[in-house]
Image (cartoon, rainbow, N blue to C red; front, side, top):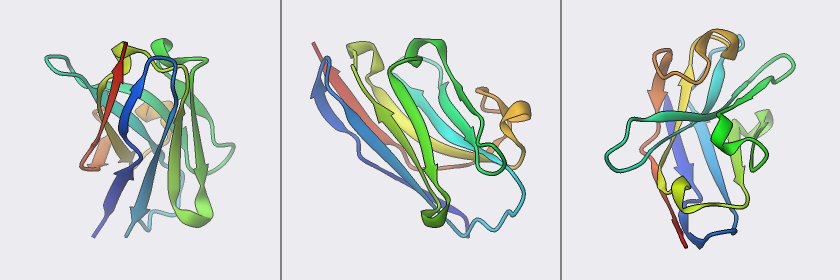
Length: 128
């Protein structure tokens, strides 16, 4: 049973930082696959934030609004992917979801079609 469990959400003021964690269990896919973070704000479509290949060179991809502020990283030994979020803005307020695809990030990208496994989400609230 594949499970993705997020943690690390919370409430911060603008300019603050948070680190999200996503632990994957039951995932025995030995080849490269894309894993990362999406978010959904109230009344808006879900959007990709940052994703990374879990094997190979660990290529990373970021949505334009978070480039230079967010960093995705992984610890393969712990089956964990992190999202370090710095200089948070009120526009970053959303539920953040961890997701895993069965293909690499070159194919999966920041669209959600190839992501078959999803976590339950963690709330991030940024106040001005």
